Structure formats: C-alpha cells, structure tokens
Length: 414
Ligand code: AMP
Ligand code: GLY
Image (tube, rainbow, N blue to C red):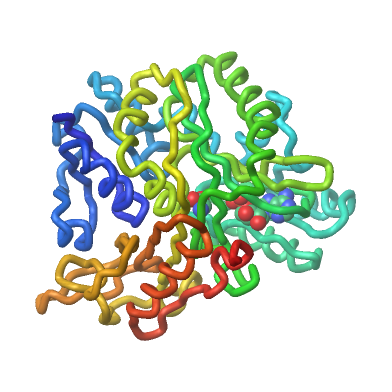
C-alpha cells in the first residue's frame, strides 16, 4: 500500500488525510488530537523519517522554506512546489513582478518600503486602496479601505514591523478592484495544468462579508456560476504562468490556487497560493472521495494526463472559530457536541467534522486550541441541501464565544 505523509495540523490536512486514507496508508505530521481520535495516524517525526512514497504538503510555510526540495532530493514524490515556485505565495512583490512578466491580468501595483512612495502611489489611484504585506501573513496581511489615511496608517504600521514583523517590511500597494471573487484551484504536474472543481470561500469574519479578513470562515463547491470563468482563468492566467515558470526553469508540481476577482472587464488575478485552500479543501475532498490518491500521485510524479473527475453533488463547509478570532483568539474552552472520536456525538447524514485548533483533555473531551477550531463539512446532492446539513450540525457543536458565520453559501439557497 502506498505510504502517504500529509504535512500540517489543520482542518485542510485532516480533510486530505481523511480522503487519502481510504486508499493509502496515511500518516500526518504533526497532525492534531482530532485526527488521532478518529483513528488517523499522527506523528511528530519529520516527513522523511516516516519513509513515505508520497508527501502532500498542506501549508505554505514549509513549501516556502524548501521542504519539497529536500524531499525530492531524497527521491520522494511530493505534491507541492519547491522553494522557487513557492515564492509565488511567499512574496507578493515577487508574485506581482512575475505576473507582469507573464502578462497575467492583475491590479496595478507598486512595491514600497517608505511612506512617501505610498502616498504618491495612492495619489495616482482611486479608492479603494489596498495594502498588503510582502511576506506570509496567514491571510490576514491585507487591508482594503476607501480611506487614504487609514491605508497610510496601515502602511506605516506594517513597515514599522510591529504588525507583521519581517513579513511587512516591504508592502505591496494595489489599485482596488471590484467584482465577484472566486477561487480556482488547479493541479500542475510540471508541464500540464488541470482544474479541480470550483469553490467559493468566505474570507471576512462577519456576516455579509464585513470585518477583518481571516484565513477563511467557510466554503462551498462547486460554484455553477464559475463554469464560464474557469476556461478564461486557464487561458489568461494559468497558461501564461506555466510558460513563465518554464522560462525560469521552475519545475512546479502541486496545487496552484488562483484567487480571482471577476470584474466588469473580465477576471483579474488577486493572488496565487501554492497549496490547497483552507477551508475550500474541506469541501473539495467530498467531491473526490474515492479518486484523489491516483490524481495526487500522478501530479507529483509529473504524469497527470487528464483532468480529475469529481463526483456529482455539492459540499458546504462552515468554520467554527474561537472567541476573539481573528485578532486575539482565546483557547481552552470545552467543546460540546462531539463524541470520543471527534465527530458529531449524534452522527448526521453527509456530515464530517474536520479538526483544526482542538486539543483532547484528560477527561477525553475536546477543547479549543487555536483560532480556527473545527470545519464542519456536509455533502449532499445540492449546495442548498449541503448547507442545511452543515448548519444543522453546526448547531450541535457549542463552545463559549464560538464565532460562526451564518451566511456561508446563502446565495445558493433555493
Ligand atoms: P489576497 O490575500 O491578496 O487574496 O487578498 C485578500 C483579500 O483582499 C482578497 O480576497 C480580496 O477580498 C481583497 N483584495 C485583495 N486585493 C484586492 C484588490 N486589488 N482589490 C480589491 N480587493 C482586494
Ligand atoms: N481560503 C483561502 C486560503 O486558503 O488562502
């Protein structure tokens, strides 16, 4: 049996391990208590020590640090780009320069490391103003505001290093785009790219897309309205990106996640991520329940010659975050409604609970242990039905100060 190591400890990695373990011998490093409670093997050993045939790297940080290169250097197949390709996410300045070289449509931008240059750039654009940390910031380093003084304050704070440390020592400023946002994830095998089912995530913490950006409060897939967008994204973004990667000698094998704004003038690329989206993956795996291993393995080995086929139906994921998320999440609150295996105490059809920031107490119950705590994923024949199931399950899981959006996938309600 293929030995697959999944690297990471969040709900995305739980979802990947959950689906891959149907066909492979899976170990998650480091994993979390919820995965272990469910019978998945977790280990604090390094991916290499676990003697894998295939490694799937969940988060961006180890990719940017070159984990995929180290593993490939030892002959292991890896889903995830090397440090060179991971720069597309590791540095927004690098990504924007790359997009310009590749000719991918993206917002006008400027990279600055002083406030005067920022003021000049904003004088040349109309609101909203967009300020981004150059480096990794767990999805929280972006401000979009109509108030130029607020934007400049944010620039100052980021440059001073107080808000994001070294990740903010350079900032990327952009002109604001408006339109409908969507995520298109594609698998790249070094040469070819194939789209996965479309997904929509919800980044703001508050109902109706208000409040600060988070790592993601929920997601659903597929998104029928995106059927026409995907071919355009493939043609105007992914294909030129593959060409530019090849020109630079980058062998990119892994997920390329395009964060897209569909504007009146067509789709624009907001950002690339170099990994599966979280929480999109907690929905996505539900549409590939029995065929992900072959696809992932072929991609990692550079031989993915056809598009992965998803099963009919839909999935909705709702994230349960802890009190104070995203600014100052508090931990240690007991979670009600889960059984000893970390799933719903009273199982519901189509519902799986993926664990992120949870910890098992000595009495066997779970408590909160991070900002994003659980991702409740429901599958059904339609998005509307999956939504009903997901929220039915969400009601059964309670903890003090629980932060949940009630409007995930509401637009798909029948
Ligand atoms: P990013 O991490 O670059 O995807 O940015 C996070 C979020 O900020 C995006 O999902 C958008 O909602 C918003 N955003 C980023 N760039 C822009 C832009 N140029 N115009 C308007 N909104 C943006
Ligand atoms: N859901 C957004 C992300 O994974 O970056």
